[in-house]
Structure formats: structure tokens, C-alpha cells
Image (cartoon, rainbow, N blue to C red):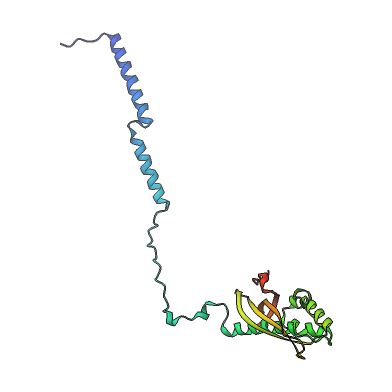
Length: 218
């Protein structure tokens, strides 16, 4: 027959059990055994997927279609440029005409007669400063002092650069005395920038080719 504990001992054992149960409950509420950590990580993953989280939205991505390629024999080179052949030729004629006018001087006429043809081929802004910006004033003074009448010659040598609005030509220029008393003078190569405005080409800049003129209106 089991022996019954005294009443005092029973109270002591009961109190100890209560303390153990309370401590165990606190331990579980604070994430004991690592059970809650896994749940929290799983919940975070689910929330991330629900919000997109960089994952696929469920709609299939559209794959790019293969580009069409052109055989070498069928390539149209001029299609790669901002101007067609006729536009390039018209621009070149403007640059070449300006170079020719630059070298054509009759000292017996007023200097305005010399600047006039260049101004007609220039843009409005450049026409107002042809004498200074092109160096034509200095060339006029030289021919007037020597009393030489010359005919200008010019020829486009190459295209230096171009963009959607302008082309820079390298133009060779000469000055040929009309009376044949002097030798032909090479005036040098000039970088002549032409721009298209109102359907017509106009010279926007004119300077020695070695100056590094790259064109543009800025």
C-alpha cells in the first residue's frame, strides 16, 4: 500500500510543477525548438512570391523574332545614309560653288561684287559674316593690292563628316589669273559645312581643312 505524502510535502511538489509548466509555456512562446523560424521563413517566401518578388508573373514572355538579313549582292548602301544621292550632289555643288566664288576676284569692281556670290550660297547667319569668317576680306585686299583678276576653281575631294542636317566637304580651291601673267595659285583645301534649310542647301561654315572643322550648327 502506497504511503501518502504529508500535506506540506504535497503543496511543495504541486508548486514545483506549476513553476515547471509556466517556464515551459514561456519557452514555447519565444520560439522554442526552432519551429517558428521555419514558419516565418516559409511565410516570407510566400509573401515574396505573391508580390511578384522578381518571379514570373504567370504570363509567358514573348521571344524576339529573328531579324531579316540582307545578302551582300542586295545591299543598298545609300539606304544607310540620311540623304539620297541627289541630295549629296546638291550639297556638294553648293560647297564647290562657294569655293569657286572664293577664288574669283576682280579688283576693279567693288568688294561687294566679290562677296555677293558667296553670300547667296550661304545661310542667313553666315552670309552676314562672310567677309570676316571666311577670310575673303584678306584675300580681296591681297588681289586688289597686286591688281590681279582671278577666276576661282574648286573641286570636292571628300566628305569629312555628316549628320541628319549637315554635311562637311573637303574642297580643293585654286585662283587662276585671267591674263595668264601669273601662275595658278593653290588656295588650299577647305572644310565647307553645308546645311539644309527650307529645302535648299546653304554654307554654314568655311575654314581651312587642317583646322579640324567637324560641322554642326553648335
